[in-house]
Length: 336
Image: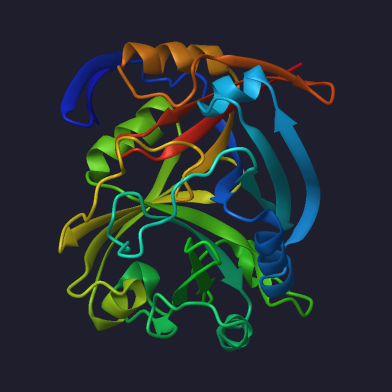
């Protein structure tokens, strides 16, 4: 057993965790994004970025209300696939959440994006540019040799129709997963490498994702310089970037701004129907054990309780919990 500190808002919780993490995350199943207009978002993700729709379903009822923490909901959820990875778009049909603030910046703590791997940055950039996306980056950036872990990586930030941040990323040989260097068979958009989140403390987030969830820390990078500033569109940006990865699915990446420091906090009154709400879906072997552990740790929950659901013959146990900075993690166990 070892003692760890977990920062939860203004409070510091001390508790014991086993050196063998229980209910370890088996995979990152999907990254969930709340949208304003499903038809508009489907058109953008499928026609502009090459995603394929694999399901499109409406849900309502008490179990979904308890899971998402929103009374009287009726949600339309579309599951999309790109390569081996998935996203879930959720449109709240009966409630109207708040839009992403126009003055949002990449160093705000409610920042989250998905990094879409491309086989050719020039072609990918021209594709999004001709569809009149709003730029975040000034243009695609090639990270320099002064950032060894990311040397030669090309990246570009832009917005989807709801002002969500998305990233195009291209990996040179020797960088990224092996699958990103396989024959793309003419495809420009290949899959999702990771979802990135703004964090205030790498240490506190490490305790949550590594010590409690068992997601493996893969590497660290300290990024700064003119290219990084123009990528994030944050003047003077200096970041500690840490990559985590479970056995399957996209990785989770921490973005801690050392300079100019973190921006706006995750709004304390956030709801799942607010457009800035993302929920990363993590599949575990024992959701109840994790739910109890998080309860004991005093973490903040979106869900009203551990929710049992039977949908289309599939039994699940699920709940949504917030990490130390407010990002939502939907913990799910498939019950055999």
